[in-house]
Every structure is written in C-alpha cells, then in structure tokens.
Amino acid sequence: MNALSLPVKVYGLPDIRFLPLDEWDERRPVALVTSGPAWAAVREDLRLQMAWRGSPRQATLSHWQEMLAGLQGEVVYAVGGGLAADAAKFLAAQRNLPLVCIPTALSVDAFFTWASGVREEGCVRYIETRPPDLLLVDLDVIATAPPSLRAAGICDVLSIATALWDWRFAEERGQNPPGMAYAEWVAAVARGILQGALDCAEAAGAGDPDGLLSLVQCLALEVLLCNLVGHSRPEEGSEHYFAYAVEEEVGPGRSHAELVGPGILLMARAQGQETAPLERALRACHVPLDAIPQEVVERTLRRLPDYAARHRLPFGIAHVLDAEQ
Ligand SMILES: [Zn+2]
Image (cartoon, rainbow, N blue to C red):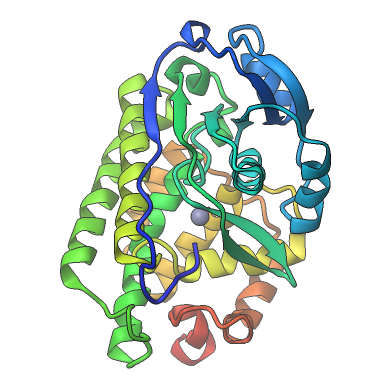
C-alpha cells in the first residue's frame, strides 16, 4: 500500500468473527461481489438474500464505476480474494453501505486494509476506500481453497523482510521524506510479525486451523502497524515494485502472490540477505515461484530502477539495482 506522509486518519481493523458460515444469519438484502469459483465454495453454506450480484473482472476505477451503476442492496458482501475485496470496498464507500468480507482464501492483506489497489498506467495506485466492518472467517472454507491461494497472503507478511531493508537503506541514503523516517521500534515490531509468519508457514500452507489462525493474526497486525505509522514502508518495498512492474509484462489475472513471491526472493538476494528461510516459507504456502518466464524476470529487473523512479515509488534497492549488483 502506498504511503501518506502523515496519518490524517488512523483506521482500525475490521471486526473478525471465526465461525462456520452456515451459522451466520443475515437478513438484509445483499449486494454480492464475488467470482464464480469463490461463490461456488460457499454457496451451500451461506444463506443470503441477494439483491444484486457483480463479478469484478479487473481492478480499474472505470470498471468499478460501471458496477456501481446497477448496485442494489442494504449491505455489500465481498466473497473471494483480493479483487472482490478491493472492488467491494470501493462500492461500499461510494454508496456508504456497510461491508462484510468473507475471504475464501488467505490470499492477500486487502481484507484488512482501508485502501483499494487500482491499476493505472502500468502501476498500482492505492486509493482510500474503507476497511470492511466485519470479516467472517470460516477456517474450514479456507482450508479447502486451492493450495496456491490458501495461505498465499503470507507474501504480504514475508515482504517485511525486504521492505524493512529498503526502509533502512533509504534512511542511510537520506531518501526518507518527513513522516517516513526510519523508526527502529516499528522495525522491531515488524520483525516480530515476520517471525510469526515464518513460524506458521508450514501449518498455514497445509491448511491446519492453528496455522491459518496465526496467519490471520500476522496479516492483521501488519496492516494495523502500517495504519498506525501512516505509511507502508514496514511491509511494502522493492518486492512489491517488482510485482507491479512484472504485472505490466505478464498482464492482469495473476495472483498477487505469484508476482510478489518471486519479488521477495529476488530483492532479498540483491540486498545480500539470506533467502533460504523466506523461500522455505513461500514453498510451504505453495506460492508459485516459477510462474513468470525467466526472460521476463530478467527484463523486469533491468528496467526496475527506471520504473521505480518514474512511478515515484519510495526509495529502495529497486532504484539502484544495476549500480549495486
Ligand atoms: Zn501486497
């Protein structure tokens, strides 16, 4: 998530309820934002009175505006992954409707955040929308998600490893703007969350309820920390820049993790960090690490310094890749 220089408003986290979805009672007419496979995973269990249903195809404002035009209902539900959540946050914010989010996989941190990522001019821009009011988490549903998505959101916690390095590097180079100064205590908290993710990776990747619960806690804490400090430097750095740049090459429709996951390993290597624990955790969570053709990876690495500068991304190893290697 991109940064504000000062926390104008500190958002909290959504309420989180862990329960089997067939125990949930919703009486209001629902505007449902979902995808075919995600809805198929929960429709037997979830009783909703549907007033409207939309399936976002892409993360662009123009597409979400089109969806908004026909939307009906008294509450917005997002059922699925990051795209459904980001679109639903936009729709609920525009209509000032309550928002309930039901993740069918722990695929991203977007379920907890107050912003929606939109694709614009070959990069990702985060616009303020709103956090969900409520997150309904059925760990049995998440356990049966496709393995490559089930716990893939671990990328948004493991990215702390490379983002913190970048943040400190920027401080040493005098590149942190006011409001984003490196704070060792924030970094220490973030490292604690990172350790939590490394510790739970195997269990979460296997769909074990305790492991999935730990991953929910890691994601929630990572988001809360960024909310409190008013920027995302503890969690987002060059690994995300790589993901944004490579998405421009491979096109939309890829999971966040299959772009960020390789980015974490590539940037950690460029930073001179040990990559083995990160790779173990990524593999334990079945994050696809070879989904991007090697030649595309290399081309992206070559243009990353220019890309990072052109999109004015906060300073990190991405800005100086050729110079440092
Ligand atoms: Zn991310």
